Image (tube, rainbow, N blue to C red):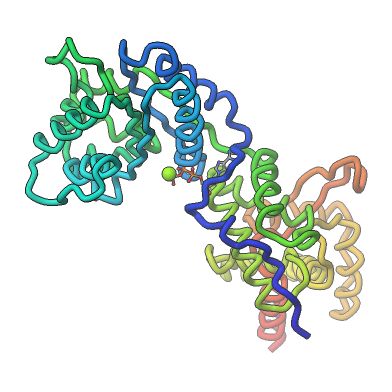
Length: 393
Ligand SMILES: Nc1ncnc2c1ncn2[C@@H]1O[C@H](COP(=O)(O)OP(=O)(O)OP(=O)(O)O)[C@@H](O)[C@H]1O
Ligand SMILES: [Mg+2]
């Protein structure tokens, strides 16, 4: 039986998609607006430089681009000519001439890519801005690649553009974007301090913001009721351990959808998430499983069976214990006590096979919930069976 795709619009999960709604970054967005508020009141009196930092996938690019849209509208309302220009420096391997060329083509589409030195193209850019009477924010994303390629001199040139031209309005402001402050260390003290005057630092996302970001994207990208709540929670949890990386979360959501579709499923189930993630991150460490005792292995087998047969992302220890008791019977073993099993679960959590959390009051009281976040249940089951067989020989 073949189902319709669970995707409604996959492009909403594309890495280049710019969401209309940026969630949980109000403070940072307001700070950006504040730093650049002069553009709406007295654009010709000053210019600004802001440094935006944050780990991978914390939304630096998305936030700046969304800000660029908003500020363009606000400044436009005042009748000022303005452009927000976003260039990813890494795309041009940090080459300042090419980066500036990119900025020039915003105004002169067919400007020749070759034959100009950095200084010439910079002057051309300034000249165009003057002729067109336009103000710009130049956002240099992945700025570290520019520092690496061009060093102090280039940064110096950029940050002191107007020092010799006091009579003219300063038409260029900058947003520098990079993951952390380390790349700045190679610059001389004055360049460093100039860059660090206005810093906006994006913290890693914790689980709840990631859930909101995912849910927003689920609505746009998937058919209704194809992505259950606990699947979103599972993905958010996995992304939390990946540095709170929203890109990782969105990619995992997309990939899980792909695995579900490939298996003709009507919705994403936790097993598809596990398949998706084990395709990204190698999961079972065989040596760790080998080190476990017989009852630990039987308990783990019970966990594998539970998640193979259930579509929920979380189980209680009581659920697992029931299956464990059946397995003990199969192998002619007397089941261990609840307390002992609990200790095993904690050990599994410690070596990263399972995860535990305290259940939300709404669902199952405050008992501890167990999830198998990264290993496909089926794979784990097969792995354990093989071990049992080998051991019995
Ligand atoms: N607050 C948010 N609201 C909605 N979507 C977000 C938010 N933060 C990040 N995203 C989405 O997560 C993904 C990663 O964000 P983004 O590319 O901006 O990260 P980044 O900090 O620039 O990462 P990198 O350091 O790798 O360049 C993008 O698809 C972006 O749209
Ligand atoms: Mg980025």
